[in-house]
Image (cartoon, rainbow, N blue to C red; front, side, top):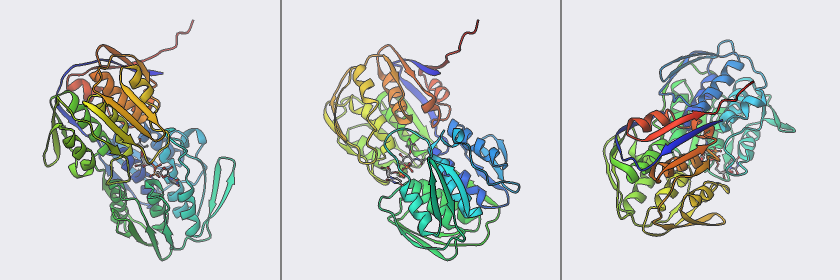
Length: 422
Ligand code: EPU
């Protein structure tokens, strides 16, 4: 068990460079197996979700070479095998191997994926999409057996603009016969990143980034290259932190448009941020005003930034409201923030935050990835020592978080509990 120890209230100055996007990387890598040739992916973050994906690649006998931030994938000798549940349940994105293996072999057997327990997170839209493309699906407990004689293009309307379903269906349809049209598709930048990569390998996809994506099936994909976009959630997390402790703190290597929903709320709260072409400079802002947020699909306010933002709201003078519309269980960090001195009341999918409140260090638990990020921000602004337990969740998604924060002046360290043997 690993924990993070923080001694709070240090001002932060210098630059934090944002890494490649986790949620793009975990989709681009499975997409790479559609070709029989080599694919090179740059700006791959070093996080444990990527280590789990790499474990899957190796299990499938796919050749993987890693150099700093680059992954070269060669699936020439790969085999279609059932990925052991111990590996696939380590992360949500293992579901992208369903679409990729189905496209490549017309047969895939896979277990229900893992990931943060922030809601029920069904995969019915993914499966319905595969069915529309001509696949038959059998369920054997937690395992899905998905088979198709051939995949045929279809019109697929998504009841919800799901990121995962949009990407998975797009991957599966890349090699289907004829045209697939995904309507009410999700519009997240990660989807554009994956579509651009597939097109680079010879796919014919138009409309990614809008709510109608058209995929004309192709027989074969060739060698490919992709550059992963900067992680907009990591960028948003550190921008929020900079607003609370920046002296000044520069967040570099970002695409500001990807976090506009956040920066517009920060501006409304009176935050001291300066947006440049590919960076943001943040200074600690006094007299922050309360603001209300409602999470929504991109370009709305990202649910993944709701938890870090809730910490900022504890420092705003007055009453703010958060409405979570994507996941039913994304307020698990609130109990810990209240233990630290916050005044947050949960009412169903809403939370009322009364500020400003003075936070004091406590022992808290990272129940999920973004809850963990929120508690780190809370620990950094709180007086005294905060111990964040179960930080494995955080290490799944934030590259070098300890190093990045220490480098700008935070007093933070990672501690690994070792078992004593006699
Ligand atoms: N949904 C369904 N059926 C489906 C798929 C989704 O009902 O078949 C529902 C979900 O229960 C949820 C909503 O649709 O209420 C959105 O789910 P979506 O499919 O968009 O989420 P996801 O693909 O499971 C990805 C990210 C999440 C991020 C969401 C929303 C990955 C691996 N995960 O999840 O990232 O919160 O999109 O933007 O890309 C995180 O990074 O901390 C994280 C949870």
